[in-house]
Length: 127
Image (cartoon, rainbow, N blue to C red; front, side, top):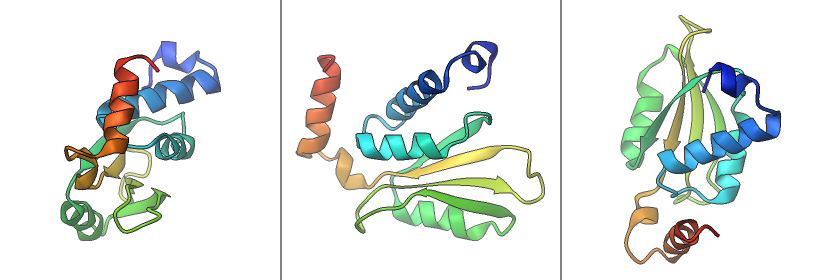
């Protein structure tokens, strides 16, 4: 989100836009506290590529295979089935592309997940 209009926004407006973008990108599967924690940890002066993972195996494989990246955890799960997020950047290109990797546990998107369904219904009705 690096453009002239975004750069002119206040800090609060930028944070709100980032939370909205993250919520859309993650299909509303992150809780409000998780969205807030990620948004507050992401520096507003830099652009990020957002990558989502629904498989913990794929998420951890990506984090452990490339030795040339640096990892900064920004959302650590409170329980083993919680969401997780990290920021990565290349050691070879420290000012280059930064990525925001978000793991969303698969159980959150399953039918019958009351928290997710309530959140989606509230969003659909503008609450």
